[in-house]
Length: 303
Ligand SMILES: [Mg+2]
Image (cartoon, rainbow, N blue to C red):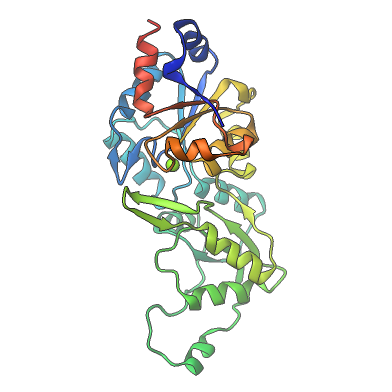
């Protein structure tokens, strides 16, 4: 499927594109940085768009960092640390737990940043099962008991995930009073050019299918994260928002579902060749660029 490379627009079209949005919602991994290293040109792109008066917000599925760590990384890599400029599933999950006045224990299969923020809000984590172990089957079965204090299972990216804890989650989810919240949706988490992590998607599907419990989803492309972001930033006209991302299934779909304009950059998960194979309208960007940094040339050419 085709989308328009911003570089192919003539000067009038470039001007009209830049005038068509007031806000930029920007993914982070693969757009702003890879492995905590800034992607060449992206800091300048953010500064340039800010100089045009565009509001820049960061919408990531990454719950590895606490809010403070995220803002510190944004600042360190040259993206500023503008207050409240960040939206991640951690925030949408906590917002939901507050709305439903949740006051039980949480069984978390997720990362340290998510855990810290949940604990900062006063939520109690249910104990995990044993980690690496040589214990025998009868002893393992002894650990697989229900914990009636657990009222929620949250699944996100858990690098210490093991069979016993997946089993415990499935045991808790057998009870109808236990909710399942998903904090990630990615199938692939790019770590470097040569190494992709298995994304949380597969573990969520496993738990949903095995337990028969329908999850609430708080990561891109799902609407609960969008609702949180739109409420937070009081977005009234989604057509005046440009979403910049590097993935089709998370970023472009998220933008499509919410009616944002879509810009795909090829500095992360998806190559130009992979985009050309896409047949799904919802996943197709309106515009593309080799890197986010190239938008600086687009702006300069109109001034
Ligand atoms: Mg990304």
